[in-house]
Length: 106
Image (tube, rainbow, N blue to C red):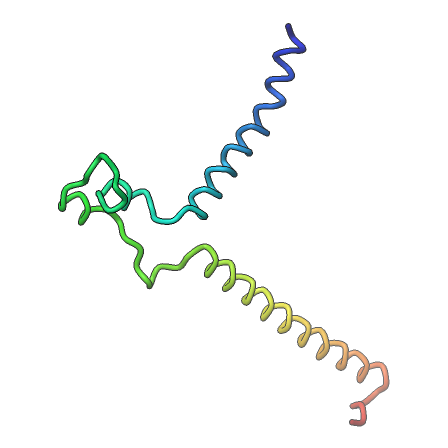
């Protein structure tokens, strides 16, 4: 009995990840959105009133999507790495000048 329970407990995280992944993919791939489905546009049986539709949150173009945030963060990390490389190059140049006893010829 303990082995059976242990197997089920070990399978639980995999099942949760699998179900979550399926739902995520379905929400991204299937056309439309849940709000349009229940508002009557998608032929749903439950219809929202005009007040409920107006109170529902809407996506504004000024809001950043997860992709846009990830893209900005990657860009910032790239710029930081380039800036750090420039600083290290300058520090190395100064060390070389100090070791030679003067400025390096260019």
